[in-house]
Image 1 (cartoon, rainbow, N blue to C red):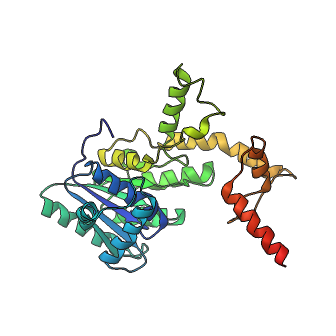
Image 2: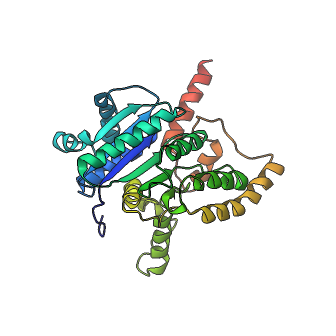
Image 3: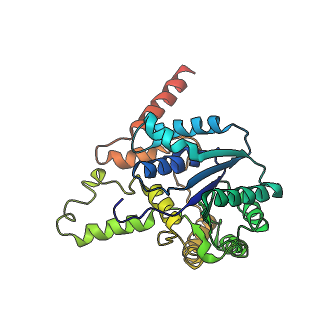
Length: 310
């Protein structure tokens, strides 16, 4: 990543570290940043989750995720062994305030060991119902307003509608200052997408070929999106994150649309069961261009075979 500087000492605390987000996105992104030598010289990654496991078990699970999901391919022994020692795991009940005071003590001990004041990144990789108790626990332990080095990263979804988004904003900003809160929008890397579109339409060389006839050749969101966002948080750059007022403006636009859909649901909407590959109408749509969904095609073939067997 050109133009980035190496951040200062950082502790990344991942709440819900046993889930898919850490395994598929966050740790592969951090590992890739280590390969690019963009991580701080002083770094700790602390994973908190209800499930008990040793540090070695946790690291092994994360390495499997990196091997499967990293854009850089499988880990090599030397690079992983250089990265893994900064990763540790704590079994924690997020409803227990003692967890947060213990965490605050651990962060203070790291500052003492490193002889510096590190940035504290708290990543909420948890269901929305856990946002409040975790934020409140951090505040009670003096890791909110009282610690300007603290940064809270909130993953989507941020509210269900305008009212719930406003309520969540009010609760979070009662514990953290607005510049401390980094909200990841539903459309990850939205600034990157907007820049791509501006580049496309402003460039006379690319615009004629970058259209619906050739769009398969151009990815919409680059695979390093999480790398960029995590690095931005470590550097304190909130450009690609949603402010409270932006988020509420977005909900003001979308809420009337959602309400209209709920009040007048279409009778012929091609809905489908959760966990399936989607409606047949999706196949019909791209079939107009002579294309097909390979996965969906396989799924329907399996379903048809099962139905025939019955």
